[in-house]
Image (spheres, rainbow, N blue to C red):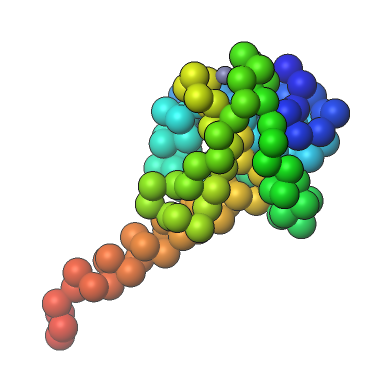
Length: 128
Ligand SMILES: [Zn+2]
Ligand SMILES: [Zn+2]
């Protein structure tokens, strides 16, 4: 499949036994289905293995928001993450997947991790 943002090729990358995504060999944007994204968010090290792109390039690519789904060609819709509203990604209206620019998944993961730590600290009783 061709990358919806550049002339690169989407290559299959797997992580563990359940996670399989497509990653562009040029801009390193990632295309994955929403279920896989949920799995990736639960996995501690997935961003280090999968999101290897340069965030500076991701930031440039992020401005390209008029893209089509690489699977069906439908115009992808920009949608915000339900938990982290500052993170936007493109999603296929037919549910084929979401496209994350390089570095966006790491951003998503890092914030999730900070929330976990914050919740953990808040949950501790003083003096324990
Ligand atoms: Zn690309
Ligand atoms: Zn589609």
